[in-house]
Length: 226
Length: 226
Image (tube, rainbow over all chains, first blue to last red; front, side, top):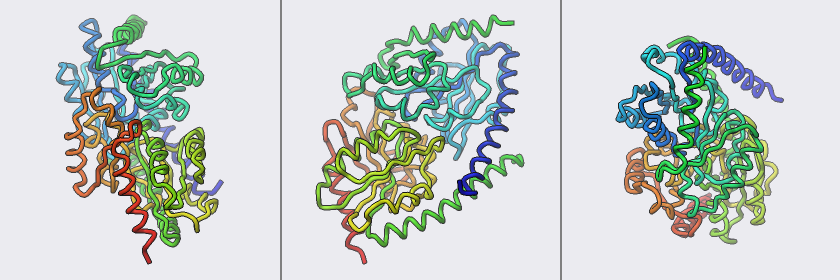
């Protein structure tokens, strides 16, 4: 392997190493506060923010909820969440294609942690890079629009391997595409047999109750520990 | 700015610098061979490979065409192009989220350049990282599925600023989504007033003739130079 490639790999390993150390600090913070932390990952337009809006509304008043929004530019997603009267902070990454644990750590002091049971961190729209960066979350959730095509899990396997749950969104578009949902799900399960899969449409509401009920169970499990 | 952030920025600048040097080598190669080189960029599922299939078929036999396929894993896209009897090579990037100019340079000797008028390089599915890496192409073309939503250009402006042409794909899905096409186009034009925009559906064929005719003009312009 050429020397310059070795250098790139070494730099990447160093960056990931430093990120993991900071991620553990974040993880301990979430654990102490008995707050479930979810790292929401998907391509641009997979429907992450729409899912977040529906999920937060669906969770109702049982839990204290808050959101961190990651985007390269704009604060549009944060504005959409703020419109629901939910505490939200925007991180603009500029040229960076993913959130890292230091960015998240810096804004943690701005939240009222004693009131929170779940923190959802919406990552930069990117199915690739965020998959490798631990933010200290309890688990990663991947959102995939079925309109992206049924070959995507095999082509971008890392995030499906690293996520605890996959939400297949925009299933209302199924009749208008050539996507084979059974094939898509079989690919995901082949990559990660234990992954939980939900099929939803944020537009029609289909499947959202099941997803929200599952997430509520995860929040309660963390809230009631220790 | 903390020292470690400065270090990351320096490393990134070095990597980009080395990439640019190699990109110029590639660019000279394409120029000598009078072959137009296009760097095709878009999210997973934007429809890059489908557009490529339709475009290559639409170009017919006037030109010598070839393809480089970039994917983290699998050679599915290359297999789809090979089925059209078009010379194609696959680059698997593994963990890398974009092609770089060295990866491209390495496989250039494998093509029969004297027969080629256009080389289309399909990048890894990612709207973010590939935008920053010059491969030595004549221009970047961005493919955006309208199902990704009309706020995407403002949220991921770099690729729209760096691309010469934007292809809005899957316009047959417009009636089944809330997307505002006029708003999407206005955002793109605000970021890059000179960009050329095409609206197509690879599924129904709508708009493909206009796009292919424009591309043929670009190929002829390079072929007939010097």
